[in-house]
Image 1 (tube, rainbow, N blue to C red):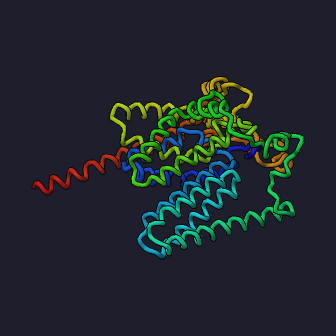
Image 2 (tube, one colour; image 1 turned 135 degrees about the horizontal axis):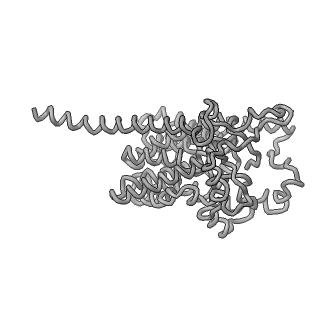
Image 3 (cartoon, one colour; image 1 turned 120 degrees about the vertical axis):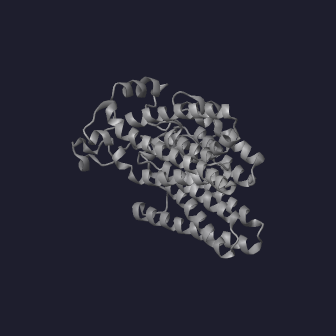
Length: 399
């Protein structure tokens, strides 16, 4: 739960793993939804139409944690498909490493990591005692290696195995000592509603398309071939939002959307992949329009600043919207570097590719929009090719 602001130039680690996450989400979406367009819709909605885009552009833990959790989920599902006993240990090792590293990266991920290990065990359970033991040993080894890394780090930095949160400045973070356990009490209903529908941090206002995600998760559970996977994919976002609503600092400082629940957004993306193929043509048009609105909202925020005020009751309308149309791009001038390291140079602040090329204002977004246009053309070409191939085969058989 970091409160440290950062610049977009410090975000390479988050961005690279987030790209892989979106790719993995597309593959998982194809499996659970059964349609490539639904998988693509889910990947785009998460990657470009949700606060996850903002988290991927900042040096925060949420993008990496979400990626590790979704990787562990994918490895767990592989155990359900495995027909070779020798692979069980390796897939389980992947679950342990990915889930373990999620916890090392962000301690609140621990309950979600436990759920993913249990899912891995459930997926292999029907194949007998040998498969179960290989899952236990593989996941245990992976988690133990991550725990060893964490213990080594804590001892090297603090001289003990006490978590870093114990060393927070008691004057600056008084609520961590005075409010429950490190600021955690119990889920507050009013906070939960604000995290979903509020104008300050509400997910469904930051990404309206996510409203359809719970419906998809429900349909997956009711009609899917893997109810255990659907249940875990639903339980992880539920846990994270309840956790966020239990924390005293629930608005999470300078942020876009429900940041402390950010690592769970990829699982909501899976719900979108299920909704799309089951929706009528009319509802697909509605989903497409709402998805486009979500992308525009995220674009406006990320291109100006992803670190929205905590005091403003509706920072998107009061800050992001006017800043965008006035051409104030890349407003974050704060770096992760110390004052001594950064000095007075502005080069460590946020910047976009268009500005590097000498473009200013809204024109600085042209390289990004050109890349999107190229992606759309490639997608349309792939769709045309996949549609024409069966028709050509039928034509040849007829001849």
